[in-house]
Amino acid sequence: MIDVARIDYWAASGSGPLHRASALSKVIFLLLVVTASVMTHNPYPLAAGYVVLLLQVASSRLPWLRVVALSLYSAVFALLYGLSLRGGGMAYALLILKAVTPALAMLTLIVSTPYPKIFGLLSTVLPELLSAGLFMTYRTLFILLDMMDNFAVSIRLRGGFSPGSIYQNGANISKGIAMLLVKAVERATRLYAVMAVRGYHGSMARTGTGGFRRDDWLPLGTGSIVLTLVLVWR
Image 1 (cartoon, rainbow, N blue to C red):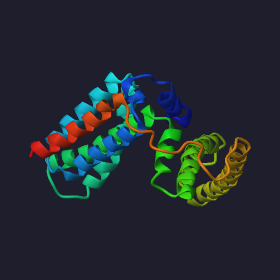
Image 2: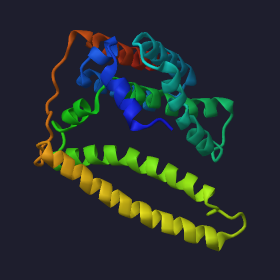
Image 3: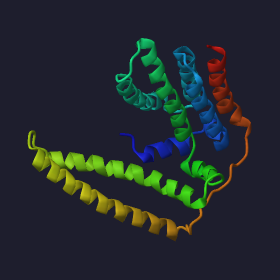
């Protein structure tokens, strides 16, 4: 599993055209791709749009192989959902593309934009309490995922899982979840204390959209191309 530190490193250390584009333009790009995915009933323009997004990621010096691999996780859930529906191969292809194309657009935003800029942009349209809560949730989510992964490894190494023993497995898992809950409260309290020491008093340090920039042509143009493909290719 890719941890949050690596995602933050990709977002903060890059120097490609997507990194130089404003957060506002990349959010608009994401909305254009999501709109195209919702509107289309044909898998071919979405497939072409996915290729366009892939070319954008590769040309911006992002780790495109890992980004593409992460976007394909959504295809697994889309395929599981598609098994409950009636339809042929084209219907499954459309469902999968409706999942992976917005996922790739969202990952493009995340790996090319430092998270303070994203939450600073959200603070202009959301109440301060809600935007700060989302910020804390973003940080804590990856911490909890890492803790859950460590817990699963530890309980296996110590013989906590016994095949066929539902009672024992349930007891061990419930104890582990209780421990994770205590650790999560402790981590959240520590995170708030660190932020308070660094000057947090209920307001995000960075707010505002930041305006448009010269390099915004890439995300805005890519999003417009994907939407145009859907509108024209029917």
